[in-house]
Length: 190
Image (cartoon, rainbow, N blue to C red; front, side):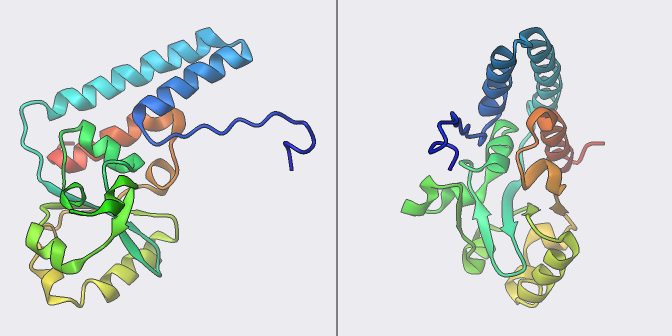
């Protein structure tokens, strides 16, 4: 509709850390506010580097990112936004080990048997819907499965529901906050 009205349209993909940084710089140039954009980029990069430094010389737990709604669950690969952040932190994402053509996308079907064989030590849940409803759905759909109860992350209470506004949608200039939350949960740091 916009194009038909001769209104220029630009759609930017924001699936990675680099996408966010380059887009912020682009919008700074586009609006004539390059100095403000560059100052924000430096601030983000400094916080980002702190998160990366906390991960240095540490062994990341085997991790699973579940993208969920009350109707279905998928596993997020490193091609997803949250998966990209996990990878940057040295994360060991079990979804990246699936032999599947579908892993070229950011999400692949969740397979309980596969998860059980990989035994993730940390599970991150990202939802676009109501957090409590998705938690209940996990408990009802996955929690009843005996395989789920034997997973290390479940036994050790390392299932984390990540904040919607930082992980279900791209957080934009709050990306450093997102990666720091992920680092805290991944490496059990305050």
